[in-house]
Length: 164
Image 1 (cartoon, helix red, strand yellow):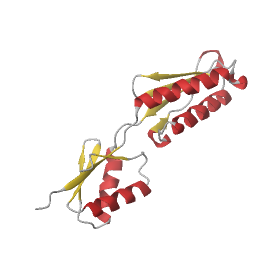
Image 2 (cartoon, one colour):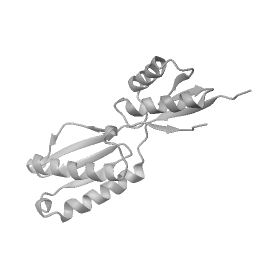
Image 3 (cartoon, one colour):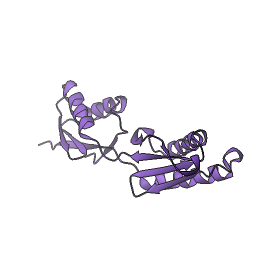
Image 4 (cartoon, one colour):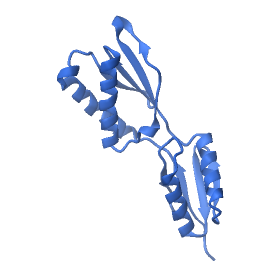
């Protein structure tokens, strides 16, 4: 009797890699000549928010670009970042918060399940909190589903875990 094979579709951000990227970006911001006196700062607040601060909108944009480059080099997808609007701060400086998206939200999960059903393969998808579990007896069907999900755009970066 063949047992069921399965995998989970998740969207997670490695916080240690985010911290490392923030450290690298901070070092570059403080050593770059054009940003030396901009009073720019990058901090991780809690486990889901990055706080950027700078003297002007222009320098904040440069700091954001540097941070984005460092995150990509560390394997963090920019799809998992949600930029909030710029806030004016004291002395005509500006701040911006960036939220880290963890988990597959319900809208994305519904799109994933709908896409799997459209493929008409012998596979069953179910939403379990912030993950989607895909179960099938056929490993090839699971591989096909993984390929289609990688090619699709669901607003967050997807990872596949618990492949059994």
